[in-house]
Image (cartoon, rainbow, N blue to C red):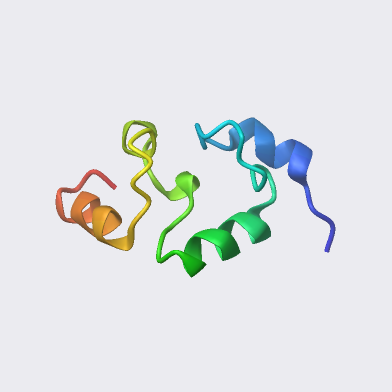
Length: 67
């Protein structure tokens, strides 16, 4: 499978600029799961900017119907 990094970067909402995984979803997801986190793309923009990517934060947003 060919990585579509150029296309992905256009829609990636990760606001952490020095991220080396930006646009490479397989690396990004793998990295965050090791930390018990989810990648930026599953969060709304305002929630993503908090840099809290934890499962717990995601669950709170779901319970609050923000996702």
